[in-house]
Image 1 (tube, rainbow, N blue to C red):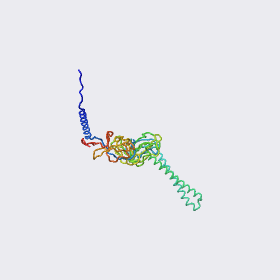
Image 2 (tube, rainbow, N blue to C red; image 1 turned 45 degrees about the horizontal axis):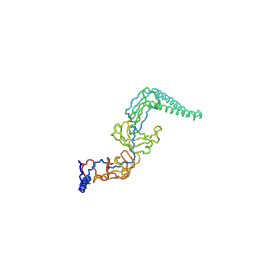
Image 3 (cartoon, rainbow, N blue to C red; image 1 turned 135 degrees about the horizontal axis):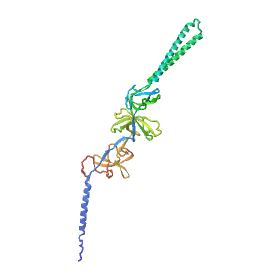
Image 4 (tube, one colour; image 1 turned 90 degrees about the horizontal axis):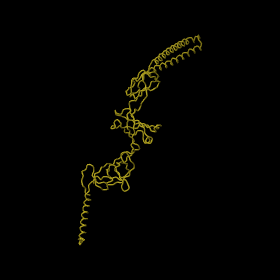
Length: 372
């Protein structure tokens, strides 16, 4: 059986049907264009920050003045009355030496003074008698002069022995080591029974008063710091506590081993948690104090061969493309030289999917369909 193909006798009918189909599709596309859903975005406000890098260093809490105390005379330690961590006041006794030999030296000096005083008194009496005999020519002028010289020598000898007596008395006093400043004992190096030399450290005393943070700064960063520059200090034991300080001292020479410069940051009013020896983190700003524009790094994208950011038009709720110039990268974002102003709102997420004039929805706003 042979099936015959039907013949199309009305070609304009087919063309008409195709036209209707294309018209319907065009209407649907136009409707899709006319209906636009606002894209939700994350935003950030352009801020200005001080110029320069933030330098962070670890340091140790130290007193401004820490002295090694020792006896001014040699001897054997018979008693130590303080321990590490003790607070001492002015003239408080720290340690004592055996005074036996020092007392003997004092007694010997007192005896020498008595003998010298007797010789001086005898020479004075001889001179007085010579004064009465000289006018009567009972003694010669030479004998008178001799007695006068003997008195002068005896007087000088008495003064010498009296000075030696004062030294012996002072030496007995030096056998008792006292604190000349109020502070805290940070270390002990002398124990009872130990024989020490004059000046040998027995204890270390951290004077009460201003507290400092000692840090070591690399040579490439030390040149950017100046005396009096502010610093922010945080304790490792309590990072939430922030203390302000200022650079008091910058070493003039680098450490020969580490090639770093010792920097001291003074803290005027340290908190109770800032104990001596604790570890702290010091934040310093290098460079000058000029202001710079900073935006988050995710706010940047590439478009038309350059770097751009999308600025939010708050009144129309659309974004506008803005060409920017990036001058550097900091810890808080990218440094911008032009294209944005402080206070501008920029999109910080999904910027590669945005286009100029696109409708957006700010955080917290309800979703809605916008017709451009």
